[in-house]
Each structure stands twice: as structure tokens, then as C-alpha cells.
Length: 240
Ligand SMILES: Nc1ncnc2c1ncn2[C@@H]1O[C@H](COP(=O)(O)OP(=O)(O)OP(=O)(O)O)[C@@H](O)[C@H]1O
Image: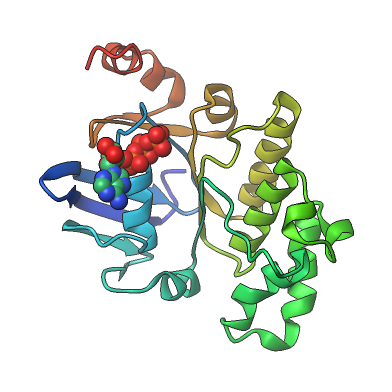
């Protein structure tokens, strides 16, 4: 892994909401094809960090580069074209469009219009939703809606996929389905940052773990070593 090039580099990223500091001094290097788990107690800044990377929020401090290109000032769709994709904690499909159309939308904006339908169907096959291409999102089960959210995210063949709690509310078997799907995407070359509270999913998936507490990164390393740290245990027991 250490031989691969740096894909994402975050340096001293900080974000405030009014007088409240939600993130401070976050440094992170992620290599191409890496599987990173991002964990931390509720409110520790995980989604805020993802929002700063994805362009949904503007960071107040620091900078983020993807494959060496600064992301500051770029709208989310421009970041998507550079190879960055994310899912949201609550799936955000276009409710009046079919499942297939939902996956076609990002492709239409990317200049791949001619082959958008073929590519959209290919993405639905990857997430095992091709049989429901003509359904509306509301006709899907919860796990199918999560898979649709992932299909929309991978439509542009991202180099980096950030999955923000893609498994919340799912059954044990459904969680396994999403882990398998993310592992397949990763095996095909996509780096993945998994933000997740379901610890067995994180440990099954991630080859490296970072931990946020109160807007700061307190640990970064191999999962078993990170989870054995006293300060990580304390954070989950509410001692920090
Ligand atoms: N738009 C916002 N305006 C004000 N405060 C915000 C906003 N978004 C997040 N925060 C605050 O920033 C802190 C970090 O929130 P964030 O959602 O990033 O945490 P998280 O680690 O993702 O939590 P969870 O695991 O519950 O999703 C919290 O205290 C939250 O209330």
C-alpha cells in the first residue's frame, strides 16, 4: 500500500459554525485504492470533514487536494469530475425519476450523454438493482435505496468514494451486502473512506482507521492497534 501515490491530501483542515469549532487541524493522506475507516462518537466532526472534502461545506482553514489538484472553491459537480464521489447519510434520490434515470443524471452532466443509459445500467448491475431500473425510488426497500445511492455515486467512475453511514438502519445480512459491494468497488481500484458507527462493518472493511473526537483526529493506523488505544476506548465510553 505504501508504494501507491497519494490520492487525497488534507492539511490543517478546520471548520467553524459561528463561534463553535467543529473541526480543527485535520491532516490526512489517503493513497490510491486505500480502504480507510473514519470513526468517532456522535458529533465528533466526521460528516463535517466529509462535507469539507466534497465541497458541500467550505472549510475555514487548511487545504485539500485530490491527485495533486486543489479542491478549494470547486462546486461538488466539478469535484465529481475530478474523481470524487460521496453518498449521504440519508439517501437523496430524485423522487420523481426512475431508478435508471437517477443514475443517468450525473452522467448527463458529465458529457457522457451518448452512453449514459448503458453506463447507468452497468452501475445498477454492479449494485444488483438492474431488475428494478424502471421503479421509482420510493418503491425500493431501505437497503435497495442505499444501493441506489451507491450506484449514483459510482456512475462517474470515482477514484475516491466516501460512504457516509451507508449501512445505518440495515439488518445484519443487509450490512454484509453493502460491505461486499464496497469491497468489489475497491477491488476494481476505487479508494473508499467509510464513515460508520457499525464497528463490525468498519473492521471487516478498513485496512486503516482514523478516529475523530471533538473535531480533532486522535488516532490513525491499523484497525486493531487503533481500537486498542486507551484514548479511543475512553472516547467511546464518554471519558474525553
Ligand atoms: N450546519 C451546521 N450548523 C451548526 N452546527 C453544525 C452543523 N453541522 C454540524 N454541526 C455541529 O458540528 C459538530 C460535528 O457534527 P458532525 O455532523 O460533523 O458530527 P459526526 O461525527 O458526523 O456525527 P454523527 O456520527 O452523529 O453523524 C456537531 O456538534 C454538530 O452539531
